[in-house]
Image 1 (cartoon, one colour):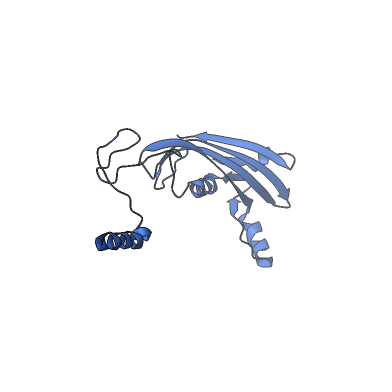
Image 2 (cartoon, helix red, strand yellow):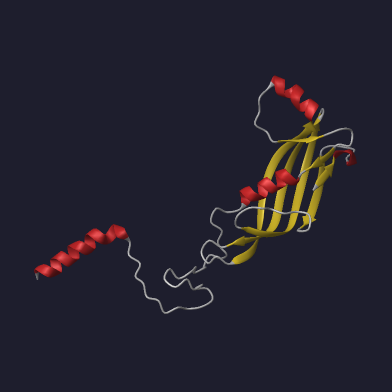
Amino acid sequence: MKLRLQDFDTFPAQVCLETGSDSFEIDYDGVFGIRRVVVDLDIQKSDDEYFCQAGISAVVTLECSRCLGQYETELSTSTDFIVSSKVTYEELRKEAEDDENYVFYQGEDQVVELYNIVRQAIILAVPMMPICSDNCRGLCPICGTNLNLHECNCHYEQINERWNGLKDLKNSLTKKR
């Protein structure tokens, strides 16, 4: 995913970049595919630096944390970064320390590769515990059946350990009778 800064005559500028699965890949646990990535960029110019705000949306295939099934969802996120030449960056870096994300272009072409910064933003947008739906029933803890697809005949009692003291009290009271 490349951005040519020479294509813009005036600033602020806006551009929409889109790519499909053939040119964008994310190697990250729990992400099994990516179908589409759209980046809406707002670009401001100040001297030799370009300040970019990117709205990113991606259609990805994730693995559900409850049922371990794969499902497709759209992730939306945003990121900010600064595009400059390495020379400009080194000159300005002497004056002030900052924690901005920088992307560099080289030479007169002013072509910037955005793949890594977009990839990182998408990875950060992946939920820690992705769930295919709010009513996902998950897997049976005894036999492993996907309860969204099939019922099982397993019987198990979910006991919250915090209530064990009351259970013991009840048992001791019934034994005294």
